[in-house]
Length: 117
Image (cartoon, rainbow, N blue to C red; front, side, top):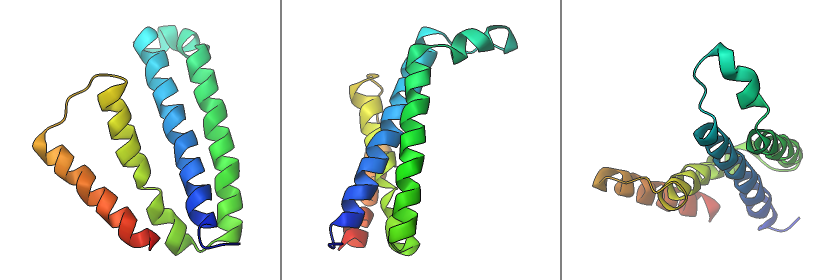
């Protein structure tokens, strides 16, 4: 496999994970979990179920990655999920960021870039 293969596999894995988290957040925004009394309604939300499917696919892809690539190389690359998740919070859910959060994201991006080289 080429040098780019681990990056591509991990990036797709991260997209699936973040996509699952976004769907879970959308489901919980529609039907907040208030206790055990509405757990069934929450668990049957289509967005929640689709998020679980994405997580399952991400897990299968991660098994593939673990069987083919060095853990010490691919595991740190998953930290880009924090960056994408935070950016989705900003864009999709209109959340706000502090200066220190922006700095943290920049540090994460820099670290991922260094690990990928």
